[in-house]
Image (cartoon, rainbow, N blue to C red; front, side):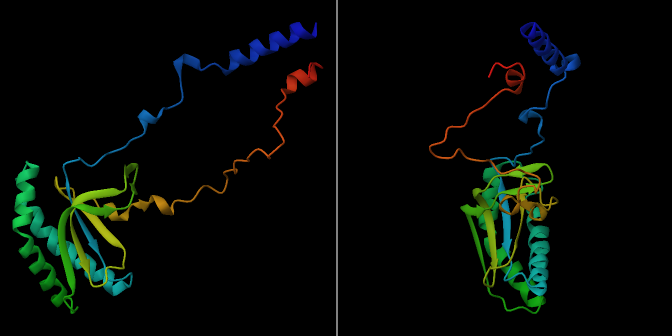
Length: 203
């Protein structure tokens, strides 16, 4: 009698746990991710420090450099053409940075580099994720370059998106509601029992 009741109970549990009308849990494919094209040129600016003044100067350099480069690449659709143009105009970018620093009453100590091995940290921007790695970019370092950075994508023109205001993955902490995963104690195998078997006396 107990065995029959147990079988009926199992079928009942399976029945009520089945999804209704074909509903299912969302898969990873449904997560909204936007990936920056492989053929892209970024702009990264490192501030001298995290002080309010140095961050303000960084933003001034950002605005000046971005305003010029965005007009240069506005009508370009080929990555090779954009790359060639930016390389040719590096002296102009350096001049813009220098003039901006002088205008902001800062000593014009800076460095401008362009290459394919500029390091970027992983960033979350809204529901989008941008993996860490080395990318082709114009890197502007102001002073000691020890402050927070700002970055965008020069080509294709995506500098209207402030990626720097995203969240660094390294700073994301687990939820306080998460339970730590317990490890098996060495030498003591974990024994798992099904409560229904114990209830029916089959353990």
